[in-house]
Every structure is written in C-alpha cells, then in structure tokens.
Length: 174
Image (cartoon, rainbow, N blue to C red; front, side, top):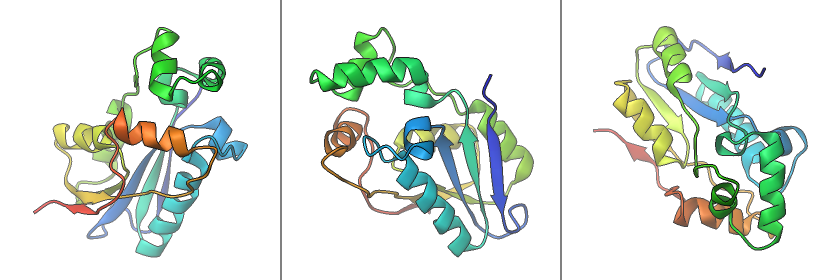
C-alpha cells in the first residue's frame, strides 16, 4: 500500500506566506523521467520554487497515479493513447472517471501544519477549489507550466482543453 508524505522546507508553520504543491505520485515521470507527462518537471521545479521562496511544502500524494487509476491501468491507458485516444478518453474507455483523485487527507494534514496563508503551485483549478472549499487560507495560485515536447504536447493540451487546467498567469486572492 502506498503512503503519502509531506516534505516541509523552511519555517513552514510560522512564515508569513508559504508555497505548497499537491503533487500526485507519478512513477513514470517522477522516477523514470518519462517525457509523456510533465510530472517530473513539475516536482523538480516546485522544489526549486519553494527553496527560492524560503518556506513551503510538497505533499506527495499516494494513490494518485494516472489521475487515480493506478500504475497498471495507466499503462493500459498508454496503449489506448498510442491508438489515438487522449488521456481523458483512455481513462473513460477503461471504465474510470477522468479524475478520481481526492485531496482530503492532504488538506487535513495542511490544516494541522499551518493556518497562515499558502500559495498553491498548480495549473489545476480542481486542486485550488478543493483547498478553498475546505476553508483553507489560500493567498493565490502560481502556475507551473513547461517541459513541453513532441512527446507530451497532446497530453498537455488535453489537460487544458478537457480538464480545465490553466496555462499561465499568477492568481492572487484579494
């Protein structure tokens, strides 16, 4: 069974503002450096962003592989993608929903660790909305876009067009 973990940097509890990344475990991208996704790039870049900022945390979330379908099913989805389906279509074809990830456990841990504002590093509005709906003190969102290549261009476009991900702009609560 996988376990989630939290990597905290700096004075996470008491700094005025901290950056956080809710990062779904991705064996193919984080460990093996796959270019089919941007996960490894996002993990490394968010760590650099947090280090430069001075305080923050990476929530490394178990059971989120392939938007929650698991590593084996993700491999099956890769086969369907080779046949022309996008990531959403492949998950649906395998009998899954587009995205079954839950952030509840990570939110509970974040509430325990910190009550001051945090800025979410993400392009995914579902993550941002989950934090807001849980009543967390969210200062805003910082985009994390890059590592676009011929291998992941369709995947990244699908994240924008089908899953509502935001390509750019920093968003701050007022």
